[in-house]
Length: 279
Image (cartoon, rainbow, N blue to C red):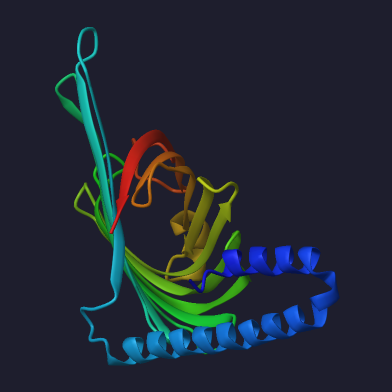
């Protein structure tokens, strides 16, 4: 069958049953290892060839996330959270697209209206070092801005990369333009730091931690303190795999602006449970 676990079981049984034939069994096992290595090499080469020959619309994977709620009685409220993630991994380049929408109405008025979209290409030019680019759009009228555009580029490093633990850091300069709901706008240079952490705790249970911090300053030194604004987005998630394609997620999100518009809170938190379907 070529099944590695079955072969290991048979070899182990053979050694315990016929210890006097150990040299012959070892020779059979050595030949099996050679065959297995050749098969893996052929599979790796086939995968590499497929990546080279794939066009820009091939090799995409993704997942959709959806959560909603409705309540009536003393409080009339309805809300929906939806997200889409698309990834394409090549030999040296990876591309990631993120779309997210959070909307909530309570007692006839809108209490949450958040939309975000981002595109991030990465070039893995070393085993652990990569260069990244990031273009991002955000809209949050409750927080005081009708649109916010950010572009960034820099370097990142993969600290851990194995089936159980993944950890990477990235940092670089950024430029951000914000259009506020009062009709004013601001554009500033900034710096971005990102952390991406995944821990496969159990076979069906996974912990994810994404942190992105962007600190911007005014165009002049005298405006650093008055005009400075640091934004931190922290999302902690706990995923439970229901099936190969379906997962449930419990997440906690913190959004912090050190200098929000007048009348807006600097910190927003959100706890939610959603379903995720991978494709």
